[in-house]
Amino acid sequence: MIKKRQDNTGKYWVTNEDYYHQIIAEIRDYAIIVLDREGYIRNWNVGAELIKGYSTEVIGKHFSIFYTPQDLEDNLPSTLLGEAIVKGRASHEGWRVRKDKSRFWGSIVITSLHDSDGQLMGFIKVTRDLTERKLAEDKLRAYASELETRNKELEQFTYITSHDLQEPLRKIRVFAETAKRSAGNAKTLSAGLKRIDAAAEKMSALIRSLADYTDLTSGGAGKSDVDLNDVLDEVKARLSQRIEAGNASITANQLPVVKAIPLQMNQLLTNLIDNGLKFSGDKPMLTISARVVEMSELLDTPAHLGEGKYYELQFADNGIGFDQQYHQQIFSIFQRLHNGQAYEGTGVGLALCRKIVENHKGHITARSEPGKGARFYVYLPV
Image (cartoon, rainbow, N blue to C red):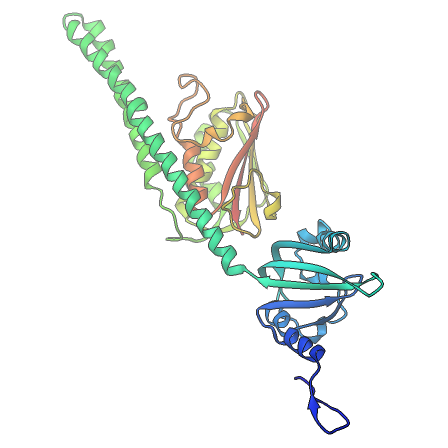
């Protein structure tokens, strides 16, 4: 409240300075904080209490308490003060931390204050809560990214219908013509019919794979707590014959419990393990590990991914590997880097993995070198 002053005539009046301080104190849309030369809080307004959640107990504390652990590790508070000293002001946007440890997106300006001799007195820090704007922008980016993904899928489906599905059809027609001309030659006729059957089976497999891919639905429907250790045991049991036949070993540390669609988590692990077995030579060795990482630790982070912590699941094998320049191409539907005759499959497995991970608001990428195995990284929100 503004204090009225009484002069020697008995009249009450208010100074411009009093008005100024009261206006600052009662502004509610901006957090206005007075810092000393070292960055310790000396005063602040109602807006700062509303935005940051602290009361008078914050006086005397360093303003770095509002910054995330990553910002503190990067020494951001000191960097901003240094910039304000040199340039007169510093601005920044990023996640800030409230008293209750929740986060908000803050736009800040720090201005240096000087006395009449030009000596540094301290700083004024003004913060605005732009969380709603940030979330709206993130949602728009996510929508744009999803739209781009859908457009790429349409392009891939066009290619599939014009090439992948046409190729076995052409073979069927050629072998059918050969069979008709060889009606009197039982051996040639039998060979032609076998080739027709093989081409038809390949086309059927492609259609089934395409159906599996398009059947994957996004969103949270059917999500529950899924123990990935149990999922891994199920997948290993189902692939046990193949694992034993290839003398393969699959080891894993403790995997997390995630909020997910159970069937899709089963498909995800199945396809990644199947990929590791397929492209490994004698005695395939697959190692699965898990850890919790910060957003900043993700590899090849897409712009639309949400803030927060992520489970990193790493699937490492000792297989033939691939050239790193193709690490995005391998997740495209029906894209194969290796000869289809040497390595069976339709080229849909990793595309399914990507779609499943994206359904769960996550991310998948890979690292490899030819002849040195491959490492697939799956990131799922904690």
